Image (tube, rainbow, N blue to C red; front, side):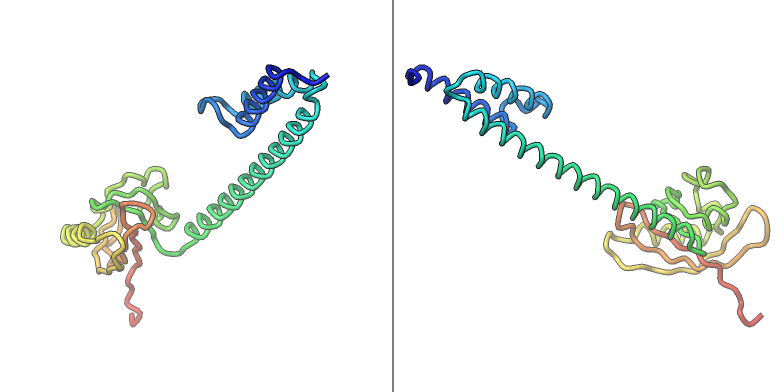
Length: 201
């Protein structure tokens, strides 16, 4: 027995609803689980009728293909995340292993990031050093000159260098070379301090 015109309209409506839900249509605030549940409900409705059993099989295949695509995308995202996390760990290890003091500072010489050599230079733990005003360990003239360099440094500009007088809380003053450049990952600046020693001594 052929389905009536009303039945055909109903079948077309079911197919349209199923296709839209499989494609993620409808309400934008519905999560993927809800859309899958809706699609399965439509699939069940199609499978319950002999006249639409073939449509049910076609929709089931689409659901399976869609699920495989989602699984592959999730796997690719997991792999990409693992690669990024591994790269971050490697870069952090390299940064910490550098024998020179590396800081990230703002234009007022306040420390936001530093490596282990920097923490040793300051005589502070790394957590305590974040937020430390670096200018308090420089002579007044050196702090003023370094701040001026940092304030005049435009994003994308090349590096600059200066000779500074480091005045630690304990011990004699030391002469330091400062290499400064804009931080490509933020609004601050990268600062590398290297002690200048008299090789002829």
